[in-house]
Length: 157
Ligand SMILES: [Zn+2]
Image (cartoon, rainbow, N blue to C red; front, side):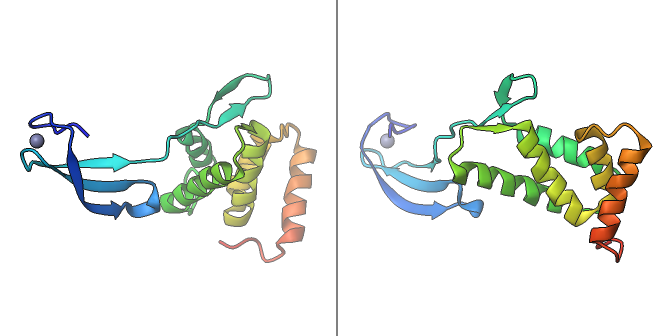
């Protein structure tokens, strides 16, 4: 690594530390020519996962987009921002562990529905009514009845 002070290329690592979440390693380096200390970060080179939309278009996976859809469904519902962040992080982890280069909006949608079904039924119905293209009250009632049958206690919250 080129020393930011004297531009010499010889250095030694004096400390290495794994960052919280384990997604980077921070190294303290000392220039062997002038002794200047500086910090570098090492990360896995991210190969972006592509989201395949219904119309066949592809776009890079964006966590903010996933989180945005989730937050909209959860407007004024008692599910913490932390739980949402955790969910999105789990999805990202699932995607990177699967090694898949692409994921469909349908798969992403089913992850969200699975999460909401567990966390908050009102938000689930909101999300499902958009995502599953529910546009009449009979379909909506079917969905609600199904939820009620699965969770006779009325959901967790
Ligand atoms: Zn130096």
